[in-house]
Amino acid sequence: MPKLTIHHLEVRFQVEGDDGAVFTRLFNRHIQAWSRLYEDARARTRKTEAERRFGDGEDPS
Image 1 (cartoon, rainbow, N blue to C red):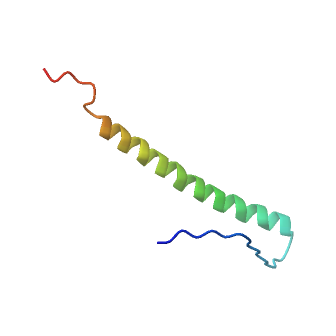
Image 2: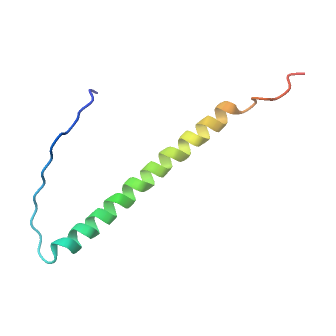
Image 3: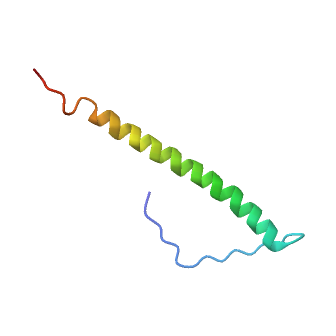
């Protein structure tokens, strides 16, 4: 998949009620989901690195 860079993105939406509150609620929901995915990926990376080091430093005799 080729790398894509977005230089300018504008999003408009209309909501009923307090725009700031709706934005905050949606932002919090999505940033929390992103954070969970990010932390899961970091945990997998740490586990993989630990598995690759398994046995390193052991005396072969």
